[in-house]
Length: 49
Image 1 (tube, rainbow, N blue to C red):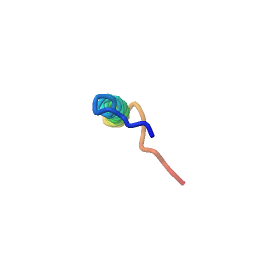
Image 2 (image 1 turned 135 degrees about the vertical axis):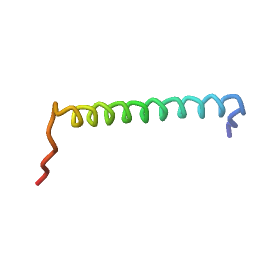
Image 3 (image 1 turned 45 degrees about the vertical axis):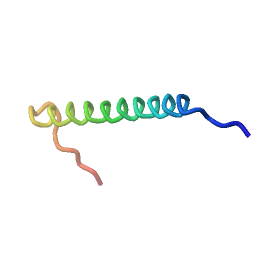
C-alpha cells in the first residue's frame, strides 16, 4: 500500500484551494457585472415563469 507524503498532500490541498478560489472569484465577478448592468439599466429585471 502506497502512502502519500505530507509534501504531496499539502501540494494537492493547495491545488484544490487555488481552484476553489478561482471558481468563487469568477462567480463573484459575473454577479457583480450583472448587478452593475441592472443598476445602470442596461438590462431589465429577469422575468422567470
